[in-house]
Image 1 (cartoon, rainbow, N blue to C red):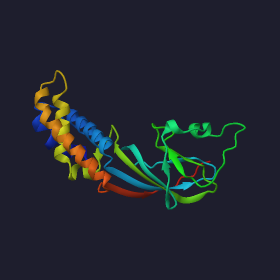
Image 2: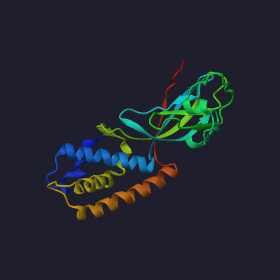
Image 3: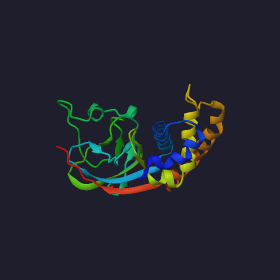
Image 4: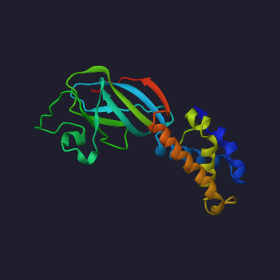
Length: 219
């Protein structure tokens, strides 16, 4: 992980008079935008199956938030992603049993994000048996708003471009000593070009990836 302050040399010289705290917040906001748009920073985790439990936690590394779940596997088989609006069962939508309704269990074949605001997915049908580390989740992450450190790849491969995005944000701020919307245009263009290239890189499987193991039991 790299400190947010490491990006300052790519930002403060180009927004005269900006304070370090303001520049750091612009850097974090730019990193968040970059990660949410590219899905470049990824993490793979292994989770337990709990009998008759549909919800599965998504591991979120420290100082990060969940940008999106990319792929889910049960044992060696990839599950089919389903959009929330296509979920037809009330028990699946609410993530808990419905009185007098029996939900069949079995081998999970589908998954969806039941609550986009939480790092949880739901699988269907719920697993019939409790088993250790049989779910494999590949997820993309972005820095948390209060992050003081970000993924290494953001600095090692994109420090100048993220710096340019932060400069553009600052120059577009109204009523500041450094406000200059016209000057912001090339910086924004440089940043957007990097976003496009990084998104392609992530799709081709050459993004930043880590593997962590965490198994959580649900009651």
